[in-house]
Amino acid sequence: MKQKTKLSLDDLNKGNVWTVNPSELSQMIIDAKKRRDEFAENEKHYMNIVKTVFDIQYLKREETDKVSQLENTGYEIFSTPDENGNNAIAIRKRPIKKVTDLTLENIQHLEPWEVLDLISHNMGTGWKGLPLAIQDIIESAFFVDCTVMPIKTMRKEGGIIDRRKEDGYDVLEIERGAWIEGIFMKMKPKVEKVHIDYSIDDESDGRKKRRKQVSDDDFEEELDLEDDEDMDDEELKKLDGNEEDEIEDEEPDENNIEFEDIDVIDDISDEEE
Image (spheres, one colour):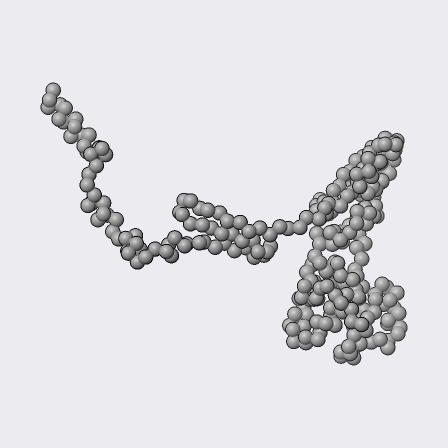
């Protein structure tokens, strides 16, 4: 029975490729190769994503020595339709062996104990000895607390270790003479990005602005000019007319005294005196 997969090669990116196992990937590649022209056109793109996580080799099933050698180094072998003399594919998910292998993508798919294990094997540097860039990557997915205390204080009953464990933290203890560096780590809750539809009324120009956030990479801003569209031809002509002519035809306002009028009033007042 054909194995069903949730994703295709077209769906893969550098984030979700970490959720795929070798068996699923082999089926994706087989399905994609059925669309020969499309696969050939996009093969480089596919492999640039896949090879950030997986090692892949094509081979012949009949080459038993090579099959055994690959299996001994962690590869899984899957049969494929014959192509250029090869009828199998060997896939190995690249292990994360050291802290420098951590990325913003793969950190999201690790457990706290796995990250603490990487730190414990990082030449005794502990948390504070990690490069800031690595700390930032880890803290993008985990809450981290680091404390250095005397051994008795750190390990006393009801102390910081017990309290952190009650709060759901995993703990790594690194002894430093009579002191202990305690590294406490807990996974941050996954937050889904919310797609928002909202509108803003711009009263300054009488126009409505509608903004729609369709996706992370697709942001559109539209202007609704319904008021202008509803105007008839005569109203538009009025807007296009000469405003200076309209100003000249206006009757003076007796209550609106300009500076020139003030001078005349002063002259009259001097004559009366």
